Length: 180
Image 1 (cartoon, helix red, strand yellow):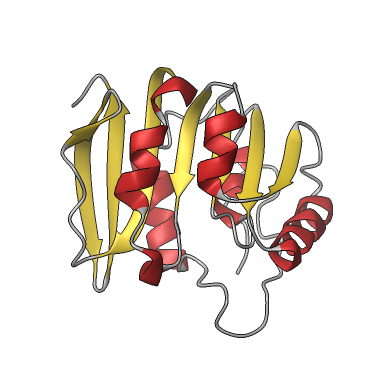
Image 2: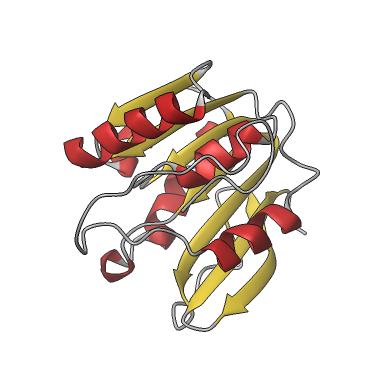
């Protein structure tokens, strides 16, 4: 696992051992960033269920202005901190240990780009999407990674489903504020 492009191009990323983290595959990550490549520069990013932090770090490498990484695992948060340091992307990043739902309810900050990638067995993306409305900037984009068999809402919390991409057992649903 590595950063694909930008100022930290080819920097390797560490991951937790075992099955507790399911990092986004390189193929899916490349597809996501191809789809949003013109919507990253200067954006404030929220990486929920961050795991290794690779999605937020990829955005930072490509010019995002800031990133908050949220994961409920202290071990994952330690890995994210190590990855932030090893990539040199230390400016304007913050790691929060806690649940995505609790963070969204209390953060009081607006984000322009949100990544949601919970463990597949949690099946909570629709619930998390429903909490986001107060946390989204005017032209926000929300990227959700989920099992292909899971159906997400067409619109929720002021955002509308823009595009769905399928990669075998994985789907990426991209929402935009104000709809398509």
